[in-house]
Image (cartoon, rainbow, N blue to C red; front, side):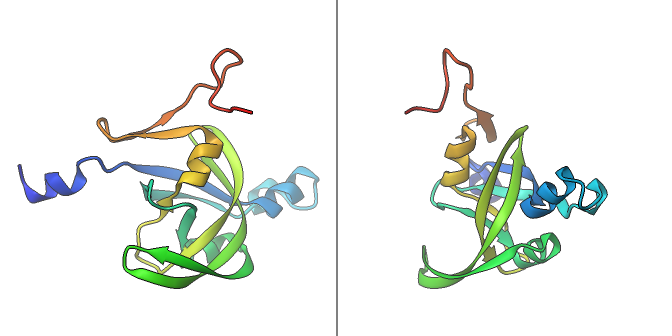
Length: 146
């Protein structure tokens, strides 16, 4: 096995659709045209069960015009730090949508999909097949429990 094969084993990478939630509400209510909603597709998103939140590069956050909500303390594999928190990301993965906060990453760093959005949207990494799997969402068999 090549070193590159070993590096990608068990790694799940996906594509997200992200939009500014406030823009989508304004468009729904007729204050702006739908084509004015700031949105984009983000490729190369690492599904990370060690991260808690959605983490997007600064250039994506800037393009979406997200609201800065302050700095938060963080823990990474390299130690403690501080990250900038932004609010109002409308996230769409495989047809499931939710609104989330996100942490800012430096440009050039792979975006991360943490466990909070994964759990809220009923998504599970399938490490063997290296894909993101939708959990059941039917009345008989739902991923949502009370």
